[in-house]
Length: 493
Image (tube, rainbow, N blue to C red; front, side):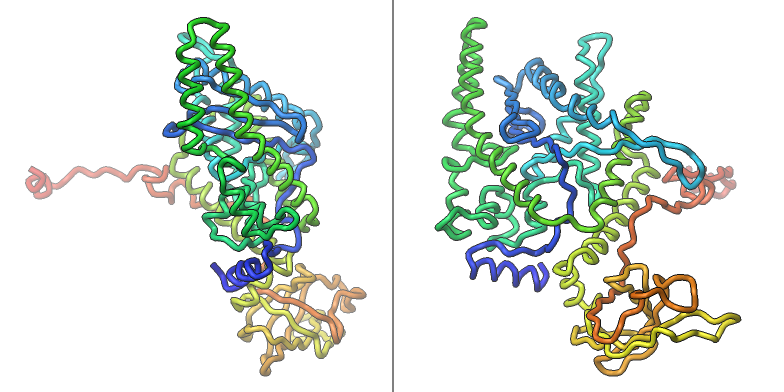
């Protein structure tokens, strides 16, 4: 935990309310999100019990499995879930745009993409695991299943994989997103409880965040947000209801037992359902960060490519081989680096972390030379100088290049350091003439920020070694075999 994060938590305890750690929203919020609150059977990794799912607070579907250990009932549940999710996904495939890549190739991209919300990371992992458990089921031959079941499995697997991509917004976990925008007065482990976290962020009138969180931790007042259920509920309600369904002797008795189970599970899901939509309201009140749209465009591209693979019947790999695994890891590392830089440039509160650590500064321009030219080369170049004074703990190094926060296309080369004043030589973002465009050069008295990093968007281009230079363990050519010498053969024997 950083110093500023600890300070924000301490201030939340003092004020009795969560403190904002972001001035803007760093995640895309869809106009029609699909909210899913899943529950699974205790002790079973991918045994669904119920799910509440829908695109509005008053229009939800409740799907249940009266006997989660029954494979037929589980498959029927997944088929019903597919009847909800797949039509939602298909609505985003209607409106598309034709684009041309830099290589001159034409491709299609959807104008929008789906967004599925879950209460916590456990819900994300459960949906991914549920998808992986059915994506290779056969639709022909012995014991076939409806085609919608493996199709849903493929899509849930894609959603789960995409959720691990830094900056992606197709399958966000609500507790993770809220924790990234507010600091509560409790531990990170306690922030995993959606009701408790929301109690700090939006406590009821007359209650402090701590009081609201304490009430939210009572499973009778606020059931867990899943996918795990409360042990007391499991023993006192769920187990007897499942046993009653098992003991039913005819269809009528089983139908009555299934209805009783559904009513009980609905009572467990409804509180979290309301919390999810209240959380979406709180997030929608925040202005969207400047770089959010670019990341959502990346999500739209990924969704469009996978939809095309599904339509063309391209098989989904069971697991990554060596080269795709390396490529995926590099993509995520670069995406994480870009995400951190973009969020800092979008949000002054996020930039504070970098200022405290000495990776960025903010100061006042004390002197500006907007017409200065560099005549050391064959032709003169516009290179204005500015003097910026700062009190931040920033140790500038002569010769290093900094990026302007207010003008990301403009960089400043450190040419001199005099105490708390730094002299920067500016380049970029001023036009192509020897006279700078109006307003492109900071003036005396301007308040500016500079950082040692750039908000570089991730372009997906990875420079991997050629196949002949790749080790054979990672897909390269096998080593040339040479027969052993007589001495080596004797040693082997």
